[in-house]
Length: 149
Picture 1 (spheres, one colour):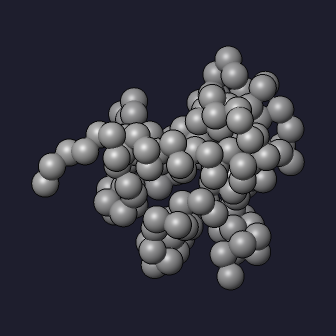
Picture 2 (picture 1 turned 90 degrees about the horizontal axis):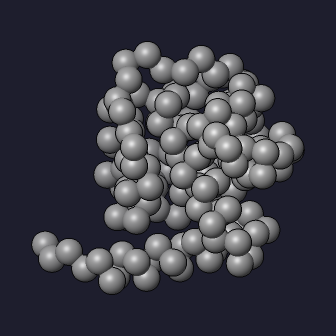
């Protein structure tokens, strides 16, 4: 298998344009990239390592790189019970840009759902069901009610 980094970059740029548009951040690819990275890193804090590996097996190279960047595998997962807890986790992950990237819970929630919606372009329905199945009960309900019917 040849590594075609130009192709990965082109696919990544195409994805980021569509993702920024989905987030209503057309042209602000830096912010969209920070949000994508933070949501993916928040997700990996809540699901098992095994589930993360199954998820990234289906992701294209550019999303794999974002998902695993800075990953330290932990046996103890974050205690997240609901969307507000998840948004607080995202804010703690994003650090100094939290107030700019996740300035309201409503916008942050929309961004989380938009990220999952975009992931569905690459991840099978069964795998998404497995990922969502590992989320806390209140979050599962939100995801199923929002857009995963």
